[in-house]
Structure formats: C-alpha cells, structure tokens
Amino acid sequence: MKELRLRPDQLAILQAVSEYGPVLVAELSDKIEFDRGTIEAAIGSLAAEGYLARDTEVLTRYTLTPRGKSARNTGLIERSILDAIAGNPVHMKDLPDATSRPRGEIGAGIGILKKAGLISMDNGMVAPLDVEKTAVFSKDLENGLADLDSLDDEVAHRLLERGLIEMEEQTLVTVKSKLNKAKIAKIIPTEEVTRLTPQMIATGDWRDVSFKPYSLKTKPRTVYGGRYQPYRQFIEHLKQKLVGLGFKEMRGPIVEQEFWNFDALYAPQDHSSREDGDILLIKEPTHGKLLKENYVKNVGRTHEDGGDTGSLGHRYKWDPKKAARLLLRPQGTAISARTLAGLEPPAKYFSVARCYRPDQIDATHAIEFNQTEGIICDPDITFRDLLGMLKTFAVEVAGASEVRFRPDYYPFTSPSVELSAKHPVLGYIEFGGAGIFRPEVTKPFGIDYPVLAWGLGVGRLFMTKYEISDIRELYSQNLDWLRSQQASAGMEVVE
Image 1 (spheres, rainbow, N blue to C red):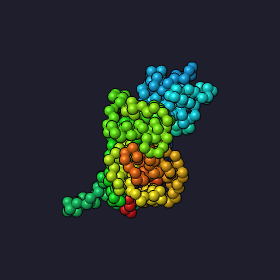
Image 2 (image 1 turned 135 degrees about the vertical axis):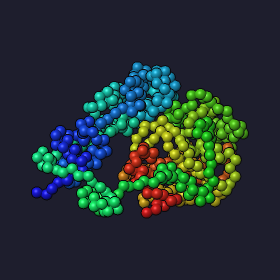
Image 3 (image 1 turned 30 degrees about the horizontal axis):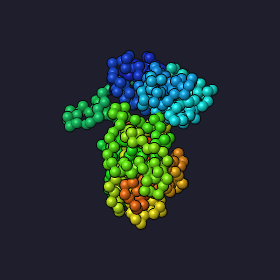
Image 4 (image 1 turned 135 degrees about the horizontal axis):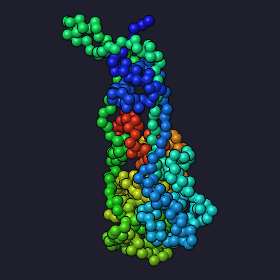
C-alpha cells in the first residue's frame, strides 16, 4: 500500500472531519484550533487529492433595507395615499397632512398609482378610479415585508425592484471523509516545504522533508489594478466627443425655477407634467426671484395671447408666481432655455445634466438620471440635420445597430421626433426626444433662426453599449461586473 503523507495541519483537519462529519466547513473552526482560511485551504487540497468529499448548497435569504424597515413600520406610501382618498378626493398639496408622510414620498406614491391606473388627477384633486382594485393593491407587498421567510418569487422580485429588500446568497459547504479511521491512523505527518535552500542541500535535510508539488494547472492570483468607474468614464468621453464636434458646454443650476423648466419652453401652467406629483418641489424657500424682466414679460405675453410670435398663445392669465416656484430640475432642457437668453447664432451648445423626477424605479427608470441636451442655431439648419445628429448618438455613442425614428409631441418643439434603438436584451428602448424649437420658445428671446434641440437619456445610451438590462446597475457595487468591463478610450473599446 502506498505510504500516505500529509502536513500536520491537513492531517488534523482530516481527522476532525472524520470525527464530526458530515460537517459544515463554517462550523469546523469552532471545533479545531485553526483559522477559517487555513481550514478552507486544507479542505481544498484534501478534496483535490480525493481524501474528502464536498457538497455545496446555495441558500437565498432576504433582509429589509432601511427603506423596507420604514415601509414595514409605516406602511407602503401608495397604501397610505389610497387610504387617505378612500372617502373623498384630496388635493395634492393636502396629501402630506392627510397621510402624515413627507412630500417627497407622496410624489413617488402618486407615480406608482398613476402607472397602475388606480387614480385620477383633476385640477390637483386625487381620487380613486377602481375601488375593488385599490382595496387590495400592494397588500401582497406589505404582507411580504411582514414575513420575509414566506416570500414567493414574484413578490420578492417587486420588493427588490423598489429597493425595499436585499437578497443575500449564502453558500454552505459540507464535507465528509472518504477514508476510514484506520487508514487515517496510518498517515504520516510530514512537514511540507515550498523552497529548496542551499542549507538543505549542504546538510542533506532535503531527504527528510516533503516538497509541495508544483501544479501547472493552478491559476495564479488575479491582480486587479485601479480603474475608472465605467459609467462615469462614459459620461466624460461623451463630453469629449461633443467638444470635438465643435459644441460648447452650457451649464445651469440643479435647483431651478418653473419659469426656465416649463414657461420659457411654452409648457402651459396647467400641463400635466407640472402637477405636484410629477415634480420635486423645494420646501424652503418655495419661490425664487424672476430675473431678466424683459424676457419674463415676453414669455408671459406669449402664453396669454401669443405675443409677437404669430401664435394665439394658451389663452389664459399667466401667473408669474407659479413660474417662480423652485424645484429640482426634472429635465436638462431648462439649461437650453437659459442659453437661449443671449444666444448669438450660429452656435452649438451641449450639456450633461443631472435630473430628478418622482418616478417608480424599474429596469429603465430612476429618480435621478443624466440627460445630454443640445441646441444648434443656424440659419441653414434643417430637420434632416437633426436626424443625422441623433443617429450619430445611437450608432457611434451607444453602439446601436438598429435605430428607429417616430413622430412625437412636446410643447416646445415642432416638428418633434422620438429616437429609439434596439437594446440586445430589452428590445427597442426610447433614448429621448428632439425637434425644432417652436417660435413661441425662440422669439421671446429675440431669436429668428431655427434652433434644433434634443434631450437623450445618457444612462440608456450606456445600457445599450454595454448590454446592461437594468439601469440600477449603472452605479453597481458588483466588483465582478466592474472588474470585467473593458477599459474605454474615447468612445472606442480597447480589446
């Protein structure tokens, strides 16, 4: 019989497994005086030599996030809103008091309920549409938060999408000895060395030691060098590309006035996108001072009767107080509107703007996101030039192979177009919209030339290029994904 030799630590661990096995590797460190790293390394070697058998089981466990703990204690925001409006409609501005919930949460809840088609909003009044559906809506989610051990896959998926729970996977490794105690007793403990020294050769000690076998099959340790975060690097290279195309960067504040975000873009003051549930208003201060009085006056006249634009306007009394309300910028086009004030054609401007909307978070929507905005003002510019620019974004920036244009509507452009491209996993997704600014937008600022404008979601461009199917992975903390991404140089990929 072949003489078996093992290092003392390997032999001790094999003896412990024989005595306690089958046993979880995690429990061995409580039974023998070796640290976890030594135990796992020894078990790997023993299993490779055929002395041990390993069985691996992966268990899934759900835990509440801080948002989930809050939702379990106070209830889901959509349930609070539905309970508040069950008797009579409630005005949007009164919902924080009616539900005892912060205004920021109210906006998110309204977004969820509108998407589900369970409420109506008329002049700010929120009312239920389907009493039977509202009575049970999201009850399964609240039950799931109360009992995480009994979650089914569908409820777990929805709770994960909303960031209310986290999923942890625990790998349990069980080991047992493949040798009986009699064979183990015959194993000779031998010190194992990894390096032959001159002293061993001179003294002859090399004859009495065991050398660790050299394995050509064992992969060396992977070394991960420092690198840029892929999405952040993508944004920087997008800026570089636009600057290389002759664009100048324009900037604007994150805390914006409704005037620049809506009124200057000819969006009516009763437009649905200006409902309190669709924007994030600033609590204190609530209003800012309207500057550039001549432009403010021109915009107000345009809303009321068309001013000098040749339009009939919106035919209502324009309210400067509403225009002065402060909000977190929901669209980067507000920066384009600010740039129109003082624009000297010909000119090309772009921005990459952080925007905020109380949206329901899912695979293609986030509350915070980046938009790339641009305007081109030139007497000879045409709508065909705009389509060519959009295709450049889709093909050269996002790497899309199939691009689609469809007519669209925006209050501030005419004609308008939607740009979509085919995502390798999600199918066609909307990148954003574009068009030619209407005279009602440009003439109040003294501009008589065509102005092309576009606004595209940078996150969706990145998702298509990197074949990501969930927008929440843009700032992923998954080290395996971050380490596996190829380094980007410009908009090209270095193989």
